[in-house]
Amino acid sequence: MAQLQSTLAQKGTVNKKVIWFAAIFLLFAAAGLFYVKWYPYYFKSFSAAATHSIGNSILGDPSKPASFSWDSAVSYALAYFNAVWKAAILGILLGSLIQVLLPSQWLIKVLGKTSFGSTAAGGLASIPGMMCTCCAAPMAVGLRKKKVSVGAALAFWLGNPAINPATLVFMTFVLSWKFTLLRLVFGVILTFGVSYLANHFIKDSEEVDLDQLMEKTEMEQEEPFFVRWMKSIGMMLLYIVPAYVVSVLLVGAARIWLFPHVGEAAANSILVVIEFAIAGMLFVIPTAAEIPIIQSFLAFGLGTGPAGALLLTLPSISLPSLLIVGRSFPAKVLIFTAVSVVVLGILCGLTGMLIL
View 1 (cartoon, rainbow, N blue to C red):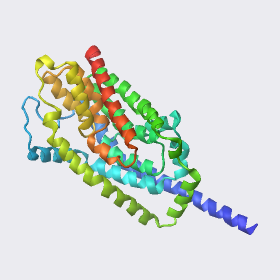
View 2 (tube, rainbow, N blue to C red):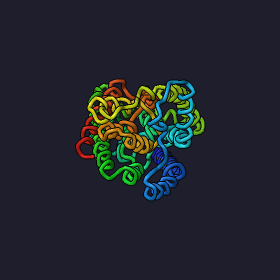
View 3 (cartoon, rainbow, N blue to C red):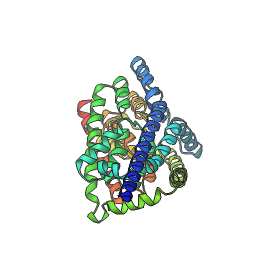
View 4 (cartoon, helix red, strand yellow):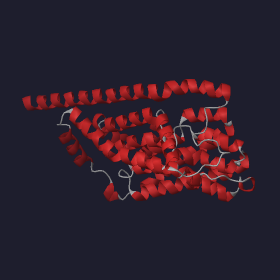
């Protein structure tokens, strides 16, 4: 009897600890997102409504032909990191805290299945984040470390940029409600549809053994919290930051080929739609930067078809973000995701040619 009471008391203590850890994570996430995203975006929405602009294109003036140089690559990387560094740090911190604060059994219960329900929960959970694809990537890595299903983690990663509510608000004020509707429809298809289909690339043998995971979690939790957190951050910094920096430099250098000057005759051709869909999938931008990029391209004669392709592909994924999550998802899932983004981008562009 005494042993039973001791066991129950120990379980009660563990449950309280788990609840406290989850509460700490939610408070930290809310405070971080309020400072980095919610508060500045609230005021930015008023500016967008008043000026019909949220700033200049990070690609520069499309009327001035660019040339390849490493100075150009470095200048783009500096402009990019200046825009995202706060969110990038927050993403790494949240990705590491997911691994050490959130209970595995809770996450697996909600996000661990290959059902559409788990995928939908992952996509809906992404909406408050409003992160760009690279800043959301460490959190997707953290979720996969906790054995969240491929579909749910992918929906969370894709949903952050693709169905970002702040971006949709800015887009309505700067471009038009038609662009917003187009982005929302294809963003929902990408976030929930493509992510759910990605589950089918996982074999039954790769699914989670819950008992084994619980045993491993209990062993890990014997270590002090700070030690586990530092290990998590250290692994993220080791595998994420070098690939992130180098790949941003590479795509910054390659932007002259990714976004070449397009003449009036080809400004709305299907070939340019395909080219810009591929370029947008590879290129990396800060949150909502696709809006001034598209605005400047349209002002200098780009057709609504290529603009529609960029509308979806620019924010959704990028070469740097694919490298960041490369160890966390099977290669076949990432290839499927990249191809799906391009295909949906082409369809978005073709639809844009008809309705925009």
